[in-house]
Structure formats: C-alpha cells, structure tokens
Image (cartoon, rainbow, N blue to C red):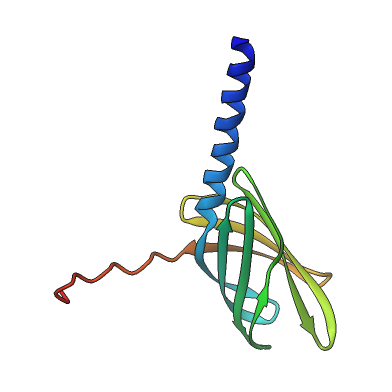
Length: 136
C-alpha cells in the first residue's frame, strides 16, 4: 500500500513539473534574425491554459508584415516545437521550429520548407512595471 502511495505522489509531482514548465512558456517572446530574405523580426505570443498551449506569430520582413496562428505546439520538459503555416507566392509553406527553453530565452532552429534553416534566439518580454496609484 505504501508503494502505491509513493508511486502516486511521484506521478503527481512529475506531472506538476511538466505543467510548471508549460506555464513558463506563456507570454510574449521577440526575435530578430538574418535569413535568405534579409532581417526578420518576429513576436511570438504563447498562452497556456491547463495542458493546452496556443500561440500566434507576428512578423515583419522584406516580403511583408503579417500574423499567423501557430499550430502543433508541443512542450516536453524544456523542449519546444511548433509549426508556422505561411503562404509564399500562393504556395503553402510549412515553417517548423524546434528548440530549448532556458530561463527567458528560447534557442530555436527554424526550418523553412526546402528553402533554408535559421538559428534564432527568442527573448521573453517583461511585463511593464505597474505604476503606483499616485502616478509615480
């Protein structure tokens, strides 16, 4: 009986650690990196609700500006993966990301279909400090 309780407690602790890591992903992350089409600026926004993770990407580069909903977002420990669907010249291109979260940085590898691969670092944006009630 004690062994069953120990196993149950261990499972709960481990599942809690995985949830805590997912909660660390929530927020706004920004990255700027060079690619075959020049400098790209991205903002990634992730929301965590229980074990469900949603996200979107806002981009600005030489081919334009836009926003897209991220798909297949998965977080296992500190390993993150997701897909950014993009349309280039009326063709659907899948941009897949894999990387590791370390504190306030995510080191990502970005595979753009058959076009190329980039390395980038997304940094968590800190929430602005709340102003005091007296405006100071």
